[in-house]
Image (cartoon, rainbow, N blue to C red; front, side, top):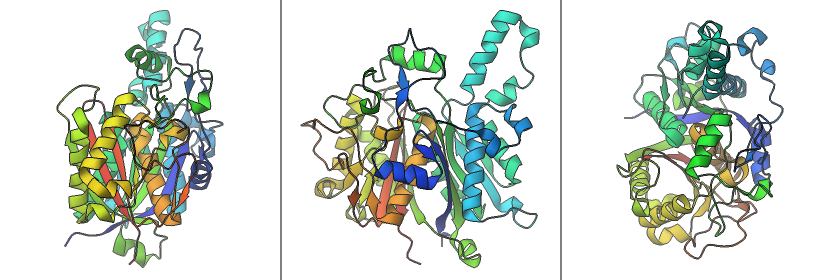
Length: 413
C-alpha cells in the first residue's frame, strides 16, 4: 500500500507579502502585487510593470556572508525554506537527515547573475568575472543551498519545465515519499526573472500585458480585455511529510496531497495544444492517481495566465474533463494578484489550494470586469467565496508543452 503524504509546513515570498498569513490574507482581500518595475530602467520597454517582491531583506533569514554568494532566486528559496521549516516545527539531525529530501523547481535559474557577469565580461574583461558566477547561476543551486542550509541529505534535485517546474517538483516530491525513498521533502519553487534581458525577451514575444497605465489591473485572467501575462517573482515552499511520521510528532496537518498527473502537448514551443488537449490529459491523470471522480473536486486554481490562448484553452480542458460538473466548480487564477512567477508559479498556487482547503475559502480572480462570452465558468470574480473545499486541484502549463496537475484533499485522518 502506498504511504500517505501530508503538508505540514508552508513558507512563501510573494509580490503580495512574505509568509502564509500575509500571502493568504492578500489573496482573500483581492490585493494586487503588480506595480511599476523598480529594479531597472524600463524607458525603452513596451511593458513597464511586474509583480516585484517588496522590501525583501534576505539577511533576516540567511547569513550575510552567504547572501552575497547567492542570486536573488536562491535567496528567495532559502528564505522561504527557513520560514516553512519553522512553521513545520521540524528539526534535522543525524537520525533523519538521510530521509529528508529537497525537490525544487525553477524555470530560468540565476538569470540576473548571468546578465550582470556578461556585462562585466564585456566592460572589464574575462579576469573580472566573479569566481561565484557559475554556482550562483546554475538552476539547481537553490535546491543545493536549501539542503546545505538545513542539513537535508536525502533525495535532492531540481525540475526545469518552464512554468510547470514547481508543480512538477511538488508532484515528484509526493511520489518520492509515497514510495518510501524519503519521509520528509522540502518542495516547491523559486524564480527571480524580473531582469532587463528576461523582460525584453518576453516583450519581443508580445506575451506580456502593456497596460502600463493601470498596473494593478493589468493581470486580468478570463476577462475579455486580457492582453498578456504580468511577470512576478518569489518562492513557495511546502513541507511534505509521510502521514505516520507527522502524526507521531503531533504536527499540524494543513492538507493531504493525493494526486499528480503530467503530460506533453507535443505541439508548439509556446502555444498550448488546441482545445487544451494536453492540459486535459494531465488533469485526468491526476484524478486517476488520486482515485477520485471529477465530481469530487470543489476548486481549481487555474494556470490562468491572462493570455488569450491560455485562458480559452484551459477553460475548454476543464469542460472536457469535468463535463457538467465544470459549472459547479470554483475556478480562479491568483495570478491576477501575484502576476506569473514562471517556475515558481505552481508553488504559491499550491499553497493557495492548501489554504483554501484549510479555511474553506476560495480566493478570487480580480480584474474580471468584462466577461468573455466564450469563458462561462465560475471564475470567482473579484471577491473570495466561502465554500467547503474537500478537494482542490492546481494546474501549471509551461512553454515546451509541459503540463502538470496536483490534487490536494482535506485531511480527515
